[in-house]
Length: 407
Image (spheres, rainbow, N blue to C red):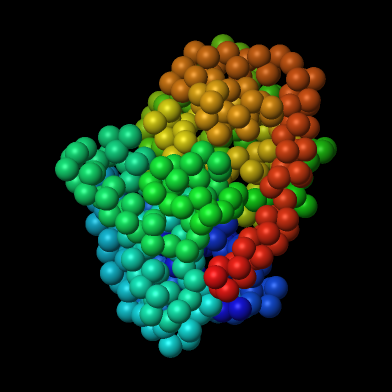
C-alpha cells in the first residue's frame, strides 16, 4: 500500500508530536508499505530550525525506508496568534507543489496530521485527483484552542475559520483523533459517525519501562539520593499552564526533601525560569536525547502535568503516555469530567485547573506517601500495557488504513 503523509511536524529523533509521526511512518515502512512524507524542517518544540537544516530550502531525504520531503518554513522567534497563522499558512503554501507532485506516484491513502488545519486542503485535493482515500488525524484542535486561550480574538475570523473547518472535516473519508472527547467534538462539527476512528497516542512499553537502581540524572543535577523528585518534561508553551509549576515550587520551598526538575524548551521557558529564580531546589534541563528518555522519566517520583482548563478537551498531551508507562504517578490539572481527568484519576491526582495551592498540596501529599506513589504508578503502567501498547495501536491503525484505501 502506498501511503502519503502530510504534516508540519516530523522528527523521530525528538519528542512530542514529531516523534509520534516519525514512529508511525517508519513502522508502516518496516511493515511493507511504501511511505512518503511531506513536512517541514524540524523546529518544534524549540521554535528554531534544528542544526543541520536550512529552513529556506527544499530537501529530500530517505530515513529508515521513508522518503521525506522537507519544505521551506518561516519560524517566528516569539510566536503569537497572528505570527502562528502566518507560520502555518506559509508552510502550507511551500508544501503545495511537493504535494501535487505526489499525484503521479498515485498513493492509496493520503493522511494529513493536524495541526495545522492549513494542510488539509492540499491533502484532500491530492487524494481526490488520484482516487486515494483521504484521512484526517486530529492531534490538536488548534483553532479552538487558540481562541479559548485568547491567542486569537476576532469573532468574525473565528466564525469564518469554523465554517471552513467544518466543510473540510466533512470532506474526508476518515477522521480520527486521540480520545473519545476529541472524536465527540468532530461529531459536533458535522463528521458522520461511521467515518470516525479512534487513534490514540501510544508508547513503546519496552523502551519506556520502570527504572530500578541508581539514576545518572541525580548525580548530574546534584540531587540527594533520598530526594523526592517532581518532574515536568515536555514542551514549554502556552497550553501547558506552566505558571503553576513556579507557583507550586515557591509554595513548597520550605520542603527540603522535594526537588523540582523542569525539562524542555518552548516559548514559555524564559518566564518559568524567571518565576523560579531564587528557589534552591529547582533544576532546569534542556530537551534531552530520545535515547535517554526512559532514564529521564525514571528520575521522577511523580510527574507534573499542568494543563489550562480552556484546552483540556481540545488536546490530549502526548507526554502522558510515557508518564504512565514509567510506572510513576501523575499530578495533572484537569476537570474530573474531561478525558485527561478520567485517565489520570486512576493513576495519580487531578487538581482543578489554575489551583496552584491545590497543585502544591498534591505534590506534598505524594511526597509523604511512598506506598501511594507505588500503587498509583503501577496502575498507570497497567493502563499503558492494556490500551497504549505501540504494536497494538499501530496494527489496528494499519487495518483501518487498508479499509480507507478500499473504501
